[in-house]
Image (cartoon, rainbow, N blue to C red):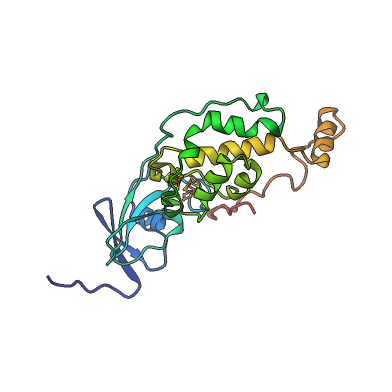
Length: 232
Ligand code: SF4
Ligand code: SF4
Ligand code: FES
């Protein structure tokens, strides 16, 4: 087969069957967008790695297996084969009432009731391999199943709810949703910072005047023809 010469600064990536030429160094999401291909889903934060929407399956040149990744955080490389993964919900809804949880004594019972599958983790590591954020998902599941909600919640701080661990779990534990549950549980049972409460009370009492038009309250309007910068 004839080998096509490619400029040094260019890579060829296969996206869902489309051959896309991209500048070396751009992300998979940038490569897709710069090719002018339509993107109606699989993108939310436009490349900041926080929305979890740009799930992809990626097989690198010379590798046998495909892995999961976020398209906005993965650099396009020559010969990559990429497929976007559509949004998919949890296999079943997980209903719970955080107001019913009045102290930590009931935490482990709540976890058992809402996520009974968590005790059946088979320690296969599938969720860890699927996670594009490098979260110790299996450990979080095992901590939650043993009632250590605060330690489990701390492990899930950087979860972007891409749900890739949900797809990977053979026991249908839905780790992403369990992680969200223990984080909510932790927050609902934790004392809010006193300065936050004091400030909210001041606002409620009208002592804290909020002037939305005060100088500096709004970002300056961009000059004509200049793209708006992200708020830092
Ligand atoms: S823990 Fe699950 S949902 Fe959260 S970022 Fe990792 S794979 Fe995505
Ligand atoms: S994929 Fe499911 S069964 Fe496997 S380690 Fe993760 S939570 Fe446990
Ligand atoms: S576009 Fe939001 S995480 Fe990639």
